[in-house]
Amino acid sequence: MASAFPERAVLIAVVENSGTTSQAESNDSIRMVAYPATAHGQAGWVLTASDYLGASQLALEHGAEATLVLGAEAVSLSTEALQGLAGTVLRGGADLAIPRYKTGPRDALVSSALLYPLTRALFGASIHLPLPLDAAFSARMAKRLASTARRPDNTTDSEPLLWPVSEAVIASFAVRETEAGKRTLPQPLDTDLNSLLTEVVGSLFSDIELKASFWQRARVAVPAKPAAEPDSSTGQAEGTVDVRYMVEGFRNAYTNLQEIWSLVLPPQSLLGLKKVSRVPAEDFEVPPDLWARTVYDFVLAYHLRTINRGHLLGALTPLYLAWVASHLRRSAGDDALAASHVEETAAAFVTEKPYIVARWRWPDRFNP
Amino acid sequence: MGQQIESALRQSMHRVLVVLVSFLPGVLVFLLAVILLTALGLLLAAMARRLLTAARFDERLAANETAGSPASFSDWSPSHSPTLLVSRAVLWVCILAGVAIGISAFDASYSTNSQLSQFLLPYLTHVLGAVLLLFFGGLLARFLSRTVLIGAVNAQLQYARFLSLGVKWLVLVLTAAMALDHLQIGGTIVELAFGILFGGIVLTLALAIGLGSRDLVSRSIEKNIDKPAARPVDPSTFPESSETPRPKLRHF
Image 1: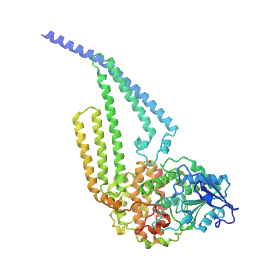
Image 2: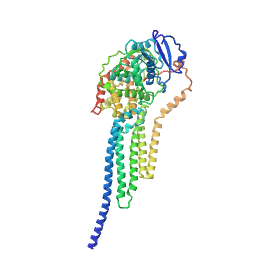
Image 3: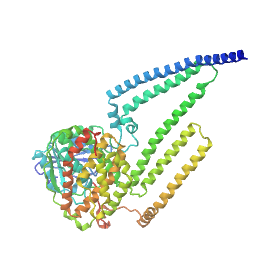
Image 4: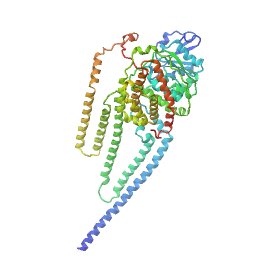
């Protein structure tokens, strides 16, 4: 921190009893304070509402010009990344800066399949990790985050998540993404993909539902962004993932879950999935437009409560894994191809946005 | 002979008229009670609907429901509106109260000594209880079968649909047996049939799961046996000591 911000007064807040305050040395430019750990404990692998609330309250108390919230394993971030994040807010005029790490084709798959495309299409923010591990924000963004984080969120049993990008966008604040190089990505303690997907995607769908009045009317222009510099260290050296197992899983789901999918998806999408299920594993691909429409249908069903929300999100898991299989097959261990596929998916979400807008307004209209 | 026949007919006619005269006011009172209570129910239901709509009951309830919660209140509601469910419940409670009052009044006004309401009222409540049992049993069966189906598919079990159907029919058979028992129909035959059916379904499921998961269980046991005893891991040595032959997917 001292090397990253040599000419600035920096206040560092660390969780009480973590032992860091006693070990660290304070000097003229750096002060350290302790703040109590949240009641829920820290989720660790991602920033939660209570993290934003704690950071924002401290920032407002001390009149901080900019706040940098760092998640678990932040020691793996380079000094340049920290400077870039803070500088984007302090000098770049942004209210929210979200880092973009160098990731491999098998990293951050939920963000690539769902979080990034939805955030880009609906909120016009081309941020690849909308559920960030680290973030920097301005004083007015801190106020906004604090007020949002205080709102009770009963959509999840665990610690509530907060979506800073959509918050910033609806407040007409400037959001920027900064290149942050390589970072160790902490993984959730709970390894059950279904429950994690339900928690994260359910929270995002709730956020989309809450902000429907914004994205229904907003005509957002999404600037095309170049793909990030690939992380060559996680390339083909580790070998390719065998997608056959995932494809078989999708076929099994297609055979068994038709009854539930037919409540959510229109016949055209079901037909598309049928075609996908018949393709051999070596040519397996979920077309981006089909994936986009499918996700939009699930968002709508979540809003309309067509079926129990837990069931709905559970029924999305095999479809997501089908996208993952498609992504892995398309990328074939090549980072550039993977990045290109992610951008293609996100572009399909933008193209298909009128579909969700129309269905949200007139859900009962005939939809072949 | 003719006079005797005429007299007998007159007496019969008289008895019919007497019964009719004593019966009609009862019917009238019954209808009046039902109509009045239905009107009252409509009024109360409308008031409840307006009150709950003004209080944003649906939104508040939706906000309090969690994503992973079991069958939510709105899942049981018509058009997924809890307000509509409450207002309809109020209406039907009033209608049923009207029927009950009507039967009592009918019995009181009926001049014969037959205690119709003493038999009919408890049986009506039993019928109502059975209908409610069937309704909630059906909902529970659907909810549980979907939960099992999705869970089994996500666990990549090939027999997910079979498992889900088994659970559904288990709950439905249990519900039907409970309803029949509640109505006191069938007696021991229902209990016996239920025992045989329920046991049969459980045995079928157990056999299916046992046979289907044989490989899964043996693999799991082998994995546990092969796994060395848990020991504290030194984070600094973790990358070197861990075996990573397969590429790992990072979903988050």
